Length: 216
Image 1: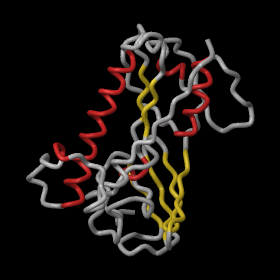
Image 2 (image 1 turned 90 degrees about the vertical axis):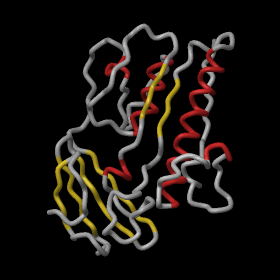
Image 3 (image 1 turned 180 degrees about the vertical axis):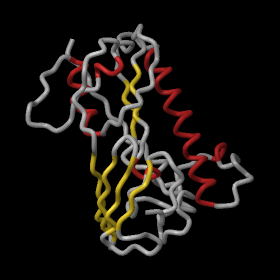
Image 4 (image 1 turned 60 degrees about the vertical axis):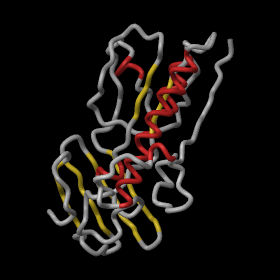
């Protein structure tokens, strides 16, 4: 039959910092009592709640008739600074820096009926690749004038090539913050155009290494 598309936007991770209007349920507010930072404690609580709820949703849905042929795509729009750059002004949340803590997000694809073994893809992919991947999965034509690429060959067992770029760019213009970043598999380069307190104007760093915002 015709494919059904269902999108759920989960906001617990976005609203964790609100003292009175957060979305964390009471049973999760008891978790992580040893965290001495209010924001980090609430963030971890929200993370645990979302993980539990997503798992329960998938488990209950695939038990219904006709739902085992479902591709679940789980991803986030951005990360969160938390404690990754304590010496950079206002870097605790998101939108103001382009380090891995902000731009590296989960991308999980799960199909209950797949017979191929679970795999972790180490290649650098982009959120713009999600749309052509879904189109490829349902057998729909992929527009030629888009920048994204289908990731299906990376995990469907075909072993086919995927024409992904060697470098990707990311940028932010939020409030008074303006930055440009370039990532490869091994290094990352930043142009901090806003003279953000705690950063250098230009910085070249290794991917996966501890980030402090000052190393060049």
